[in-house]
Amino acid sequence: MLKAVLDLFDRSSEDKENPQYSVELATAALLSEIIRADNKTDEREKAAYRDILKRQFTLDQQALDALISEGKETAEEAVDLVNFTKVINQKCDNEQKKSILTSLWELAYADDNLAPMEEHTIRRIADLLYIPHSQFIKTKLSVSDDDNPI
Image (cartoon, rainbow, N blue to C red):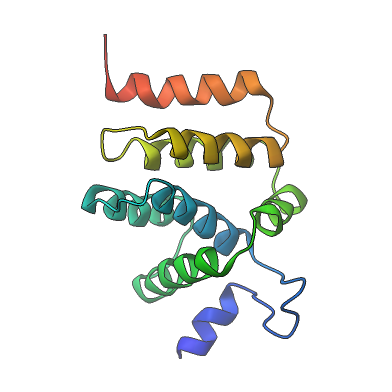
């Protein structure tokens, strides 16, 4: 059964040099990179990671658990972010990419502390997703303003 769930994420284990990921797995891995960016994992970040994946993708509990586990493992094994962003660029439109960027910011702010390395990682991801700097800033402000109303 677990194999069937993992097959859902379309990961080709035969080609380690040029792995193929699904949008779900690529997104989970990018989110995991944000959690790992500041070398501190907070329970609020773990909860936000789960909530974001649950909100973005319609998955049952078992598939969600598998995606979370696989996303963390894939991020830990990754040499860079290019293979993940390449999948998203190929399969997602601008609105979907904006939604992923928003999710990255939400996760970065989940512990009420934006670490410089989290922001740097999101900036790199945004660049690789061809998201203009103005959209990067607007998305950041929309998420940070939600948390800190004036």
